[in-house]
Image (cartoon, rainbow, N blue to C red; front, side, top):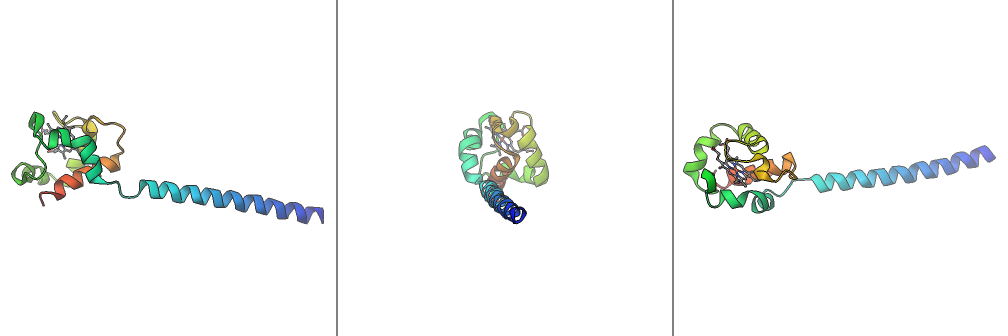
Length: 113
Ligand code: HEC
């Protein structure tokens, strides 16, 4: 009898822990889902990519972006994350995740495609 009660309460504790873990997982998946490229651009890229500061290709300038897009999106991702000449890694905002940086690249590339 005692053993059965013990198992019963262990199951309750375990299932409560499972629910908590599942909720935490669901939350972190939601938090990471689809970074907002436009928001990242506005926060971390616009200062140079709206004005052309330091020779940055201006968002929406198809001629400036064409030869860059021809290098392939993976190259642009790498250059944005690791830096490229006067382009600082992640636009100088190292708190950005790789995914957020890529979303901002997609946003700028999407503006000229
Ligand atoms: C401090 C100014 C500055 C900021 C901020 C900045 N960039 Fe740049 N970016 C540049 C410059 C300058 C270049 C041109 C580098 C070159 O071609 O020599 C460049 C080039 C690029 C390129 C083209 C790379 C290639 O291979 O041709 C991409 C993509 C890019 N930036 C993405 C971003 C993203 C995404 C952000 C924001 C997270 C950002 N940049 C923020 C200055 C900046």
